[in-house]
Amino acid sequence: MENEFIQFLSGNIEEFLTYTGFANFEIGNLIMIICGIIFIYLAIAKEFEPMLLIPIGFGILIGNIPFKDAGLQLGIYEQGSVLNILYQGVTQGWYPPLIFLGIGAMTDFSALISNPKLMLIGAAAQFGIFGAYAIALAMGFEPNQAGAIGIIGGADGPTAIFLSSKLAPNLMGAIAISAYSYMALVPVIQPPIMRLLTTKKERLIRMKPPRVVSHTEKVIFPIAGLLLTCFLVPSGLPLLGMLFFGNLLKESGVTRRLAETARGPLIDVITILLGLTVGASTQASQFLTANSVKIFILGAISFIIATAAGVLFVKFFNLFLKKGNKINPLIGNSGVSAVPDSARISQVIGLEYDPTNYLLMHAMGPNVAGVIGSAVAAGILLGFLA
View 1 (tube, rainbow, N blue to C red):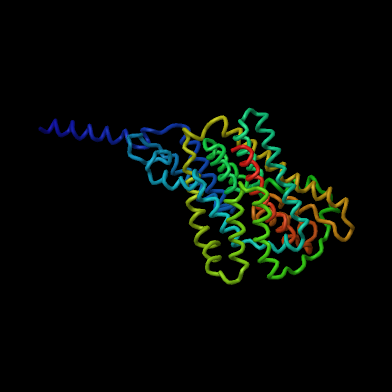
View 2: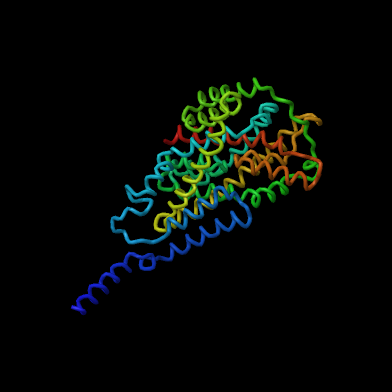
């Protein structure tokens, strides 16, 4: 009887051990766990986009706990699992429009309204999207995949997720991680490009203070913006519609509670779910592929092109402006839609050369224009490639 009990107990222990992460561990899991820890370190120690990198980094850890596939419905790719249900907000494109609702409710478009020509800088920065699209095609990606990859150049994580969920669901994990990684690395990537492409004289340009924008203009802007952009690119409606709706909640003055909910609790909850599930989608078996490496390289290229295009466009545009109306090229980087980090970089670099030259308010114009521009670009790509 004792021997039978020992055999029964040892058999159960052996069976239990086959279910542990140690028994199912692969080197790919270790690589991804290290990546997750690096994300968390950058968020805490360097304060690189902590609201994004901590959920994503911890999600990477969750997604790479190895387990035995025994129908327990644990992983994010197993139908019916809790993680899979939460991940549907990414795969079905529910989360990005809700993020845009919150962005609209927290964004002040006054800088753009007071100086509409700054919209052109935001448009110029989208060149990174189409430049990366062309390079991705040359590297052998299918047109729909190339379009989804190119959107990384807009430095807009929700837009990248929304577009890739429609055009290239199998690449969505790599595209999302790449987009958010480069958003977090704005303070590292952009300053060298800005210094390289501008002269000391250009960095010292002082811009006229933006004019005061009336309440009526602020209310009209989201309505006019919706009608103009969505009549032009109807496929961008989910993102643009929610962006402008959120902004109208903010600017109307009579829906304060709704605006506060959109830019506070709602966007916080969605950011947590989005970051955690995107991170968890990086299971080593699904994520560690040659295409993922190519996507990260293309993401860097598109981001560099977008930053350089914005700066160079301002330099070109200045050729046609009178002396008192010239634009400081240091705000050209803010055409990418990493709000407000890229605008903050314009401010920081500008203060290095003139401690009294404040560029933040000017940089916010192309920065918010970049948000609109990336959504429009996504709509164009979706319309042509879906």
